[in-house]
Length: 478
Image 1 (cartoon, rainbow, N blue to C red):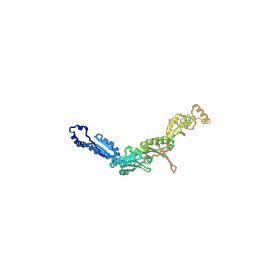
Image 2 (image 1 turned 90 degrees about the vertical axis):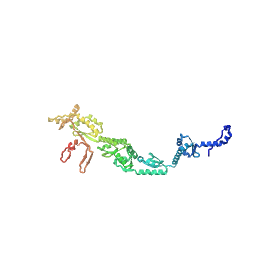
Image 3 (image 1 turned 30 degrees about the vertical axis):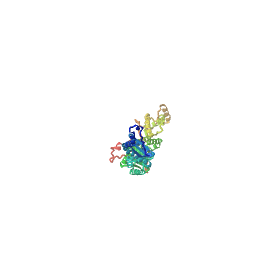
Image 4 (image 1 turned 135 degrees about the vertical axis):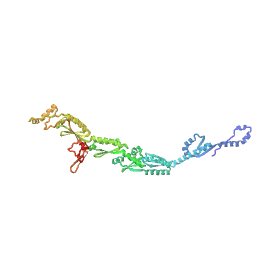
């Protein structure tokens, strides 16, 4: 439908002197003047789809915001009209056409585009991203939309079918080109890592340290994955520095059966259960292996070693000047009460010795108490020379002993030989072997952890050198 303009003369024209002449030429004059005026303006008609206008309207209005033109979108006819001065409309024709063209292509892309999920583990995607996979894809396919969904662990690619196909090939080739290397960390570390989430362990042990590599964990092996060989080397060196196994020697395997030991192990494993900092404690008959992050392993091993050392069964001997002192102490209920509350420690008696046995920490503190008790007992002797006195005393010994005990709280005992009085007392430590075996010939071989210079043995064989000169080392100390 063409637009039309009706032009009519005003009534005042009849009052003019030469009205007839003016009226006769009026139509041609007005048409010529109107045509000349309209020649200064221009109307531009651009094809327009409703969906394209909806998506481009804001952009078009921004472009024409300061322009003296009129825009009329006609959705019914699918035409966008722009009217204004010739220079203005001519200048705006290309920008407006470009906006509509780009929008139309975008609408067509949205209608025709497909989305495909390409499965890529987060750690592998991180490696590929560091290597610029997204830039490579967009250089090849500028209109392609690429995003990564951690929930589904998939790379979402949106575009035309041929673009998706090409992008998938690029991503698969990039993953196939990744370099792999087996990681050897030892049995205990492998057992610990095998139970870890490989994405979390990669993030905590490699990505967090800006190392562009990933750890792949399978039941059979550990592998490092990276784009370049130097990244594999950096990852291996880093993991071997930060992941260690440490052995804690078990002096007394009975300690491992204590409920307190089980509680300690459980508490330490729970306290160090965070991915990347988790530790694992493996226990055998004579050995405890702590595996995990270096800092955690060292602190946990120290705590376990302290517990094993303090609770290992040991015996310490407090030497007594004479057996009569032991008998006296046995008769005194007051000093025994000191040890009754300590159920960990037991006492036994030998010739001129009291043996304190139990966990090392308790034994050491109990030995100090026992030394003080023994030192508090005074010992004196009276030599009997007159004939018949010993026989007479023995005949009424129980009466005299009881009487003196009641009146003086002292114990009297008749002995054949009285040992020499010493200024102090001797201390002997009885050690438990770390390892012990008996050969087929009946020879017993035992390994002890102790100071050789203080160990109670009958003889020490120390072949220092071929000249038998005890000049240094253990021989010199002996």
